[in-house]
Structures are given as C-alpha cells and as structure tokens.
Length: 186
Image: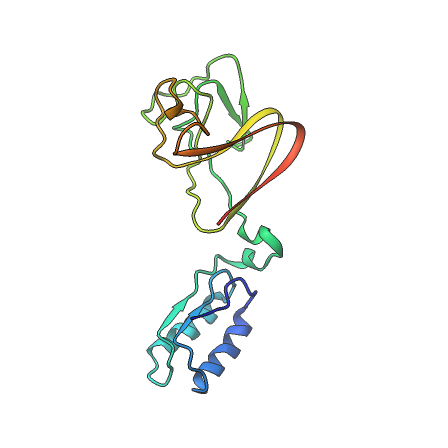
C-alpha cells in the first residue's frame, strides 16, 4: 500500500495522480489518501478508476474530512465538540450556547435523565472522538479535563463514576489562570 495520508493533495493533485495510474506504469494496488482534500471531482475521478480494467488499483481510501485538512500542523485534525446536555451534572451551569461550563453551588434545573451524572460534577460530549482529533480548552481556576468512554457509570459516589479513577476514562487536573490545552488523540 502507498500512503499519501495528510500530504495536502487537492483536486488538481488527484487529476495528476489519476493520469499516472491510467498510464499503467504504476503497480499500485492500494492507495491511502485519507486526510487530504481531493474534493468531489478528485474522489469521483479516482473512484471511477477502480472500475476501469486498465487500472491495477484495487483499494482506495479517501476519508478526506474537507478543506480543514489542508491546515498546517495538528489543527487540520480540529473537531467541534458538542456537549451532551443529558449527561451534565446539576452543579454545572451551561452558557454561551452550551460552549461554556461553570461549576455553581446551586443545582441547575435540568430534567431527569438516566445518562445524567448524579454526584460528580462532570459531563460528556455528544461528539464521539475517533481517529485523529484535536481540540483546545480554555479554563480559569481548577478544572479536570477528561476523555472518557461512553460506558462510564453515571450514578453513585464510587470511582467507577469519576473521571480519571477507572479504566473508562483519563483526566488531567489543571490549575492555572487562563491557558490553552492541546489534546491530540491518534
């Protein structure tokens, strides 16, 4: 397999690649173009070649993720995280269109839900993290920034329900003024 994953290949590059594959000089059977931006026409062009008996290519991977994949560095893997309001503990207040979380003393009036954390001031994102992911977090004061499987328990005081204290989650404890934190999951 030839991997050109993350090589910033665009529609124009796909046209050149298709031309090379068409010339039958290539012995390439598998091609990985994940994390590029071949555009719709580039994907169609290369996909059509899979059906062409003159091509040797048998497998093509083109999970391109859009133009953001052309950004330099890890920002090409940026993902928007959407908070899951069904999991938020009642001591956490959501604001700024559910983009900001603040610990408060008074319980918030969230409706009952079986997925809600009932003891620990935690919440999950609705967005699953798969493959390469990058996001930044701004915080003030004390905070635990965590990554968790959906299977984490939500009810009770045990460590099975607490981020970073079990085999379902990892947590980073932070105490600074305002800082950016980088997570890159591979």
